[in-house]
Image 1 (tube, one colour):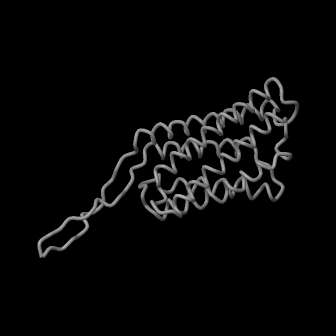
Image 2 (tube, one colour; image 1 turned 135 degrees about the vertical axis):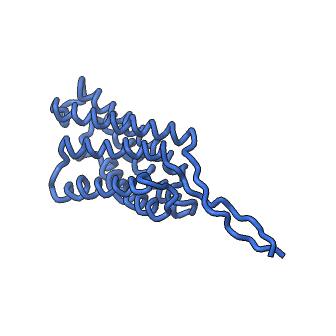
Image 3 (tube, helix red, strand yellow; image 1 turned 45 degrees about the horizontal axis):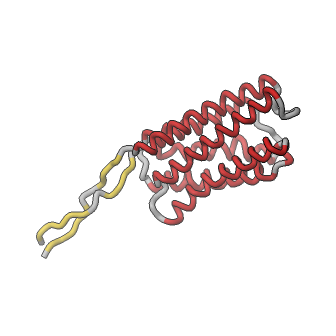
Length: 208
């Protein structure tokens, strides 16, 4: 007769795809921050979609595609846990940015402003809900350790508290608040690329 007992907890480093997608997220976040400063300093928020404004908006589309890649990496890494609900939550986060990417492409093709493009609003709301759910799930699961465990929640709280809620109160984001938001995604890329994931090591049998 034998008794089965858990052998403890193992830690695994980020896989090569996770590191590559994390680096993509870092680049996307920094690109967004640079584009935001350029947009505000050059007054490119409004006007005809030509010249510098067109280049600026194409740059944002590239950054958004980078965010999608980053969040696919987060989804594949399973930091919220292996269950269906956890996978659905991180999948929704990636889907939110896919909606935003579709909205950005629609704006480029149809020369729509943000207020006239419903996909951007829908994507922004989904991002708020999904990022907050992801942050809570990752923090609760404990599959990421160290500061990486808490970063998705901090990112979500910043977005919801500093950008999303104030918009509903009639306060538009500033160059500073939007640039910091972009940096939070760059740091999420660092988290994905460097996170150590905790997992059950399995079980072993001992004689009774």
